[in-house]
Image (cartoon, rainbow, N blue to C red; front, side, top):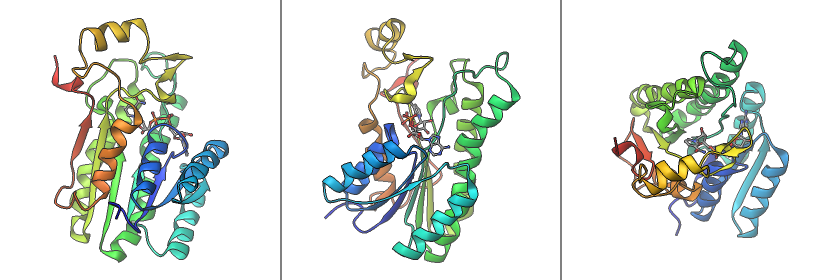
Length: 258
Ligand SMILES: NC(=O)c1ccc[n+]([C@@H]2O[C@H](COP(=O)([O-])OP(=O)(O)OC[C@H]3O[C@@H](n4cnc5c(N)ncnc54)[C@H](O)[C@@H]3O)[C@@H](O)[C@H]2O)c1
């Protein structure tokens, strides 16, 4: 018996990092996992990993900002698999130029389109099917950068803050249809996204000094995708059934310090 036996779970950005870990863990818990990913190679690799353990993977190459194709895929999934139980809005970008003084309107729009607008559109495409079922879970991957900032990630911060606010709005709107909407805010995770301008931000001497050695992160390390994906599985499972509109911070204690 798995926590997600026979559920159909969509995960965007499932090719690497947190999305890959969520997909693997959901499959291990018995779900049929619909993998949405723009990178064909990583999509194939995660699909093979799931199938190697007899899990159920349904891969689709998708740029989540291609809303026509996104809609076709959602229709195809409902037609072929019968339902959608869970949507995990995980795909996001972390562009290198992110400050008010240095970025451009185009940079800003690109970040907001992938990190916020596509979260709205993915939810908009899936929610009507959940309304028909009178059941569903929508889980947004936000960030601690949605409510605290290092000062160099403006558009990313704004998009993640928008997700946190929108989680509440969606939860209130969709509660009457038994659709639970929650968000997860990871702290620093070591993933391909933590590499900015060729440098892994979670391994620099400054990071180690401040966050690890001086315990700005009380648990003394950056997180791994596996540190966060269990929380996503919890939110998708029956262990979470009277909680909606919430943000779960998974940051090793970082936001509890000052
Ligand atoms: N890494 C961190 O430190 C950290 C911290 C807090 C929150 N987060 C959030 O966690 C989530 C996962 O981050 P990660 O570290 O695994 O990132 P990552 O860059 O390692 O993986 C993101 C995945 O999303 C895919 N993707 C990006 N844009 C896409 C698009 N337009 N269409 C389809 N797929 C797309 C990428 O190809 C990639 O496979 C993101 O929402 C991110 O903002 C990450």
